[in-house]
Length: 215
Image (cartoon, rainbow, N blue to C red; front, side, top):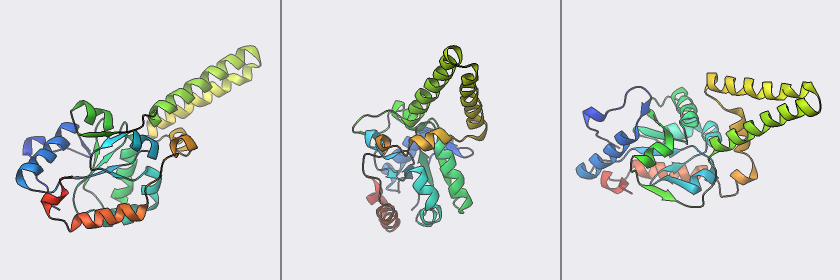
């Protein structure tokens, strides 16, 4: 797959902004070139709620288990998408370790792409995982402080533990709470993508004519 992009909109580093991705798609449509491969690493429920048209769905946990298979089936640049960029950056590191260097993280995630006017497919609305994390973390801190006042001062350690966890999450650019919440039934009550089907789609894409990838 080949892809051209205007020099003035080329990404720097490991991130790419929404306007650049849209410009790539527009340039591909004009020139009959292949569009970039877009891989969404959010949960199944998040993906069903809204996703970039034509994107491939592979939750971060699945990508982590099949990184080498995915890297082997992508012939050109890939844009990784999540809600804020944290999970997409983790996915990029997995792929880089597997030898795929031409992977970019969509800066600002799906919200930025939506604001930029990108083509979005919408379905059943659910809370984004990052929003769920904020709710649970806030509730635990509030519970710890309340229990510390009414039950035992030691309960305030819960609030301190949550604060320490959030600090570590920011410093390491990971989120253990988010990973745990992603496994809850509410976030998995839709069909998870079959890895074989996703890889087959990517394999077929490599052999399509460039204009056939405009989907």
